[in-house]
Image: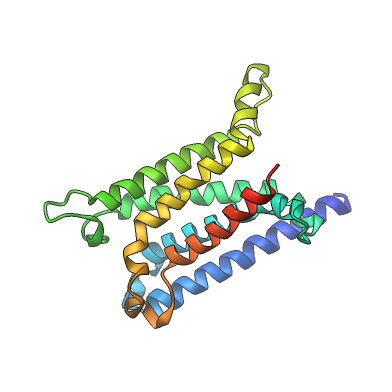
Length: 217
């Protein structure tokens, strides 16, 4: 294994582990230390939120390092070289989050997303729609790096284009907004004064979107 490959591997591991540590730590503090969530829910409910949070931050890194470099920000080459690996890990975490959310999504766990008759609220439906579309786009984006078929070149050029990616990112933002904006407007309900994960995620998403809008070629 040459030095470049070793550096790339080390950077990927470091970025992923530090991101996971921050996201898991934030989730535990907010929901268990300062919040009312019982510790028995750490293994699935809180873990799912942590995985979602981690995947979003990693995706922001994956899509943001290049444009940030174009804007003149100092991004280490080792971070740039780690983007593909970070993107793959982020996609796997998104996939895991999707499966876990399907198991958790019920009136008993998320009563705020359901009407009295157990039907989803409008906000829940819009959030789910945004999440599903964002996931499909991310899946297609990952596939675009794994195909060598000549007839797919037009698809690859389209799905990796600046215009498409900027529009596609908005579905992730919509997923976050409709999922949690009601809690954003109630600081008194923030456990330990810590903003909801959806709000922190949206703030990071917004920063990443601006960087992509200004710096993506």
